[in-house]
Image (cartoon, rainbow, N blue to C red):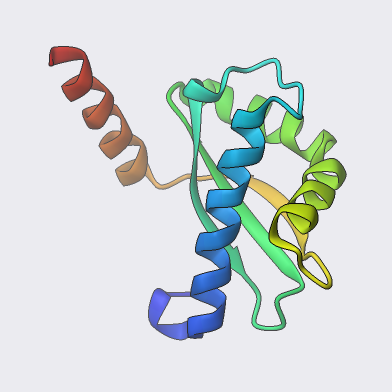
Length: 119
């Protein structure tokens, strides 16, 4: 599903969920064995009925992607609860985590990290 297929409401909620999820992960309210700097939330896609959010994770090390996704799936109910509190939603969408397989995003992430290291 391309960006042009999504409603303004879907795009806005996706962006808000992504930002709130970063806040939740950075707050320390969840224990994750993998540090936050080793992965990022590549994108959030939400269904038209706003009941399901697909969250795509990208990691610095491709081998860590499945491990991170699995760990986040274990705490997905707590994340959903914290998202509903943070966003004050009447009903929070069900969330599912996936490893982002887009090599472009991973290459772009590595280029950004390398440019920061050179500064």
